[in-house]
Image 1 (spheres, one colour):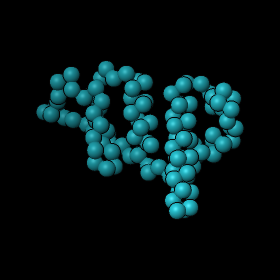
Image 2 (cartoon, rainbow, N blue to C red):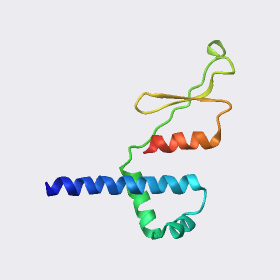
Image 3 (spheres, one colour):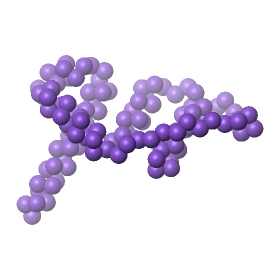
Image 4 (cartoon, helix red, strand yellow):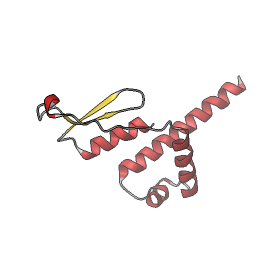
Length: 109
């Protein structure tokens, strides 16, 4: 029972740090300012960010080029990313940069 509680706390701690890191990225402020505002030590922030990045599986992308025969209408995706898992991410020409950044951050998590 104690082991389960320790494991649950470890998972909870990772999730808390994952959310803090994502919150800082969304905020647009420097790590130093974010940590000061949150009352978090900068060294802990950098430690957890590095630790969580090392644990995450690497994201691999491939650029897919289409010949003129397979051209899609302009309203379709203008860029397609194929993830290592085989899933495809189609990105339209008018995508909002902030939305795209949030999607890519979520894929890394």
